[in-house]
Length: 149
Image (cartoon, rainbow, N blue to C red; front, side, top):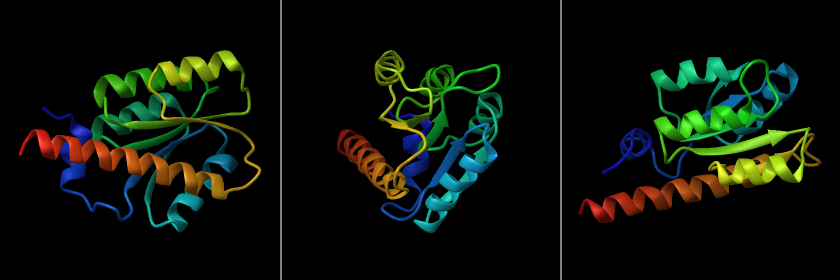
């Protein structure tokens, strides 16, 4: 049994760039993160709200999502929970300038694979966290291949 993310990944380029969704209501910050990811060889789709991200996700299940916590009507934590319902293997990285221990614990318990404090001291952090998430995605793919072998 696999979810839509794993099915999509099995036909995508493994180890090469993947399609990543970046969600943040701050255009400047969203653009910087997206550019770092593009420079690393990934295709990037951007969304200005959690609602827009859910609409995009319903059309294409992204294997990796970066999202802010504090945005308009729907929070990044609520978005994380909805994304995990649709694609349980989707890796979600939470970014926030409103970091607290409580939100970090809630994000990780809700299925986030990482939690980053904004602003980043070094943009290489985006690349490093992405590489770790892709490693996890590849391990999940391997698990499904072994199960279905």
